Length: 182
Image (cartoon, rainbow, N blue to C red):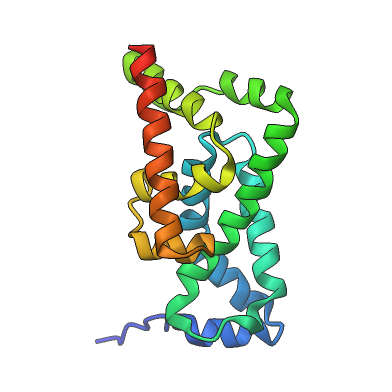
């Protein structure tokens, strides 16, 4: 009988420590573990994948520069979420300043096969485009991403009460715009 060798998969704590000390391979492993999560958060908040690769790369670049600031390994996912939200916030603010980017976003079709559903998704993101990023982001994180209210507050670096108010304001806006549509 031959013994099979199993690859030892380092935990996040070890990878984080190694990456913080400059180990690129450890950072690459962290990237592979969390890139899908970062991309999912960014995509759902932005409503488009037009700038997704850039946001993911920028978020991990930001993370690489401040790995030493993370104190609890258990908070790694949420920490990456906060970094991603900050990056997306900057992108959305830029979109509001440059209207031509907003028009370009409307032309980017969602990856939905049902035409009726595609239209509803497009209508939803048109409604979200009418919101400032500080209101839009908490709503998307909670209503689309399924994050808990405390996690939304932490990711957006706001109080729980502020997160609730912003989500409620966004919900009212989205409902009003969608009701006008139908």
